[in-house]
Amino acid sequence: MSQQAHEVPKVLIADDEPNLRKVLRDMAKRVLRSETWEAADGQEALGLFREIKPDLVLSDIRMPGMDGISLLKAMKQEQPNVPVILITGYPSLEVAIQGMKEGASDFITKPFRLDQLQVILEKALREKRLLEDNEGLKQQVQHKKALEKLNEELNRKVREMSALCSLGQTIAAFPLNRDAILRSLVNETRSAVQAMWVQFLTPHQGGVMTLARSPDQPEGTDVSRAPELPKNLLERALRLRTPILGPRLFLPSDPSAAGGLSKENFSQMVVPLVIKGEVIGVLHAAGKLEGREFDRHDLLLVSELAKRAALGLENKYLYESVFDVLMSTLRSLVSTVEARDLYTKQHSQRVTDIAVIIAGHMGCTPEQIDTLRVAGYLHDLGKLGVKDSVLLKPGPLTPEEFDQIKAHPVIGEEILAPIGFLPEERALVRHHHERWDGKGYPDGLREEKIPLLARILTVADVFDALTSDRPYRPAMSVEKGAAEIVACRGTQFDPAVVTAFMQVLEECAEKVVNRYNGAKREKKEISNG
Ligand SMILES: [Fe+2]
Image (tube, rainbow, N blue to C red; front, side, top):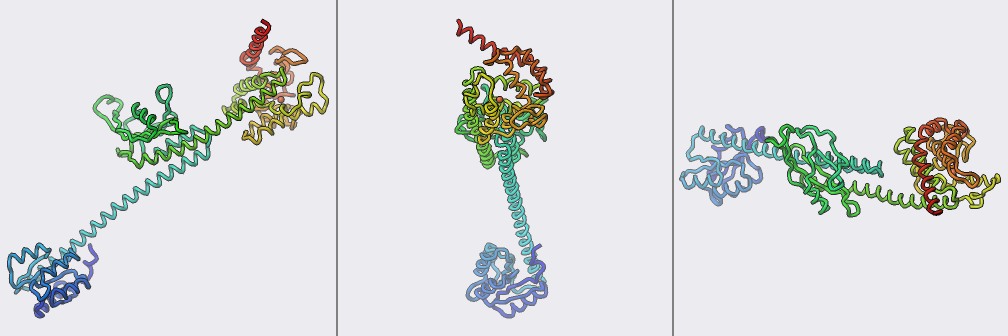
C-alpha cells in the first residue's frame, strides 16, 4: 500500500465557472474527505499542480488561456500517474478521443449527477493508489534484485580474498615445500571459483602426472572420478602458455551408464603455471557448482592464484639452485681436505653412506636422513683450518698439535653457521667426536645429550677409519673393525647405535667397504699393469 492511501487526498479543481467549482469542491470534500485547491484557468491550475502535487485533478476543457487538453498534456508530462478527470459542457467524440489519448482517466459531462461524480472520483483515486502500489512493488523487486546481485558480488569478493590470503599464508609458512604450495593452490582454486574438481598436472613421459588434486573424494555428484584433462586442451595450454576457458566436458553421469544415454556436462578451464618462461604444469578446474559456467572473471582469478603460487615456487627453485651451488663448493672444499691426505680419500662419502644405512635401520625420519646426507659429508670440513704439518704428521702428536686437531669440529660448524645451514646440520658437524662416556670433544657431551645423528655418525666415522689404510697400519678387515667398535660399546659409542650397526654390518660391508676396496684394487691393478 502507498503512503498516500492513509493521508488526506489533495484535489485540484480547474474551472472558469465559480459555481461549478463550488459544487465540485463540496463533492470532493464530502466523498473523498479531501483538501481542495481551485484555479480559474489552465495556467493558474498548472502553477498549483506543481506546487501542491495533487492526488486528483478535475479540469474543465474550455477555459480562457490554456485550455483543459493543454493543461492535461502539461500535467501528464510531469506526473503521469496523477488521474485527471475532464469536464465538458459540449461533449463530442473527437474531444473525448483526444482527451483519452493524452491520458485522461475519465469524462464528466455537464450537467452531471452527484452520484455519478462520486463514482468517478472514487474510481479515479482508487486507480491512482493501485498505480502507486504497483510502482512501489516494482521498486521493491528491483531493489531486492539489486541487493541479491550485490550480495553475490560480495560473497565472490570474500571467496577471492580468502583464497588469495590462504595461499599467501601457505607460501609464507612452507616456502620450500612444493607439495604444500600445490595442495593449497588446488584447494583455494576450488573454493574461489566453486569448482567441483581441481587438479594440478605436470607433463611426464609423454603424458601427464597428477601432483595435487581437490577434493580427493568427489561429493555431490554421480560422477565418481574427476574428469580427465582432454589432451588437445593440455597441448594448447602448454603451447600458448595462457589460461583457456575450455569447451564443456561430457561425461557419463553414472558409471553403470558409461557410454550409455545418461550424460552430464561440465564447464572447464586450464591455467598454466609458468616459472621463468617455462610451463611446469597446468591447473585444470572442471564442473562449476549448480551447473554454471566458468567465466572470464573466474579465469582471471585462477590466473592470479597460479601466478602467486609460481612466484612462491620460483623462490623455492631459486633457493635450491643457490643451495646446489653452495653444496658443490663445499663438496669441493671437502675434496681439497681429503686430497691433502691420501689415506682419507672419499672418507666423507663412505662415512655418510654407512651412517645413512644405520639411521635407516634405526627408523630415522626422511628429514633426519636428509640431514645426514647433507651434513654427514661435511663433517670434517673444519680440517681446512688445520695445518698440513699437524694433519699429515706421521708420528705421535704433541698436546698443542692435538688441540689443533680437536678444533676441527668447531671450525666446521663456524664455516656452516653464516651460510644458512640448519641447527641440526651444524650440530652433526660439531658433535661427531663426542663420546658416550662424556670424554669426547669439543663439548664433552655425554649419552643422550649428544644428538642421535652425531652418535650414529661417530660409529660410521670410526668404522671407516679402521677399515681404511693408514700411514702407520694397513686397513683392518670388516670383522676386526666391527669387533673394535663393539669393544667400545658404552664407552665411546651409544650401545643402541652399536647394536643397530652390527645388524646392518653385512650391508655396510657390501655396499660401502667392499665396493670402495674393489674400486681401489682395480685402480692399483690398472696402474701396475
Ligand atoms: Fe672428524
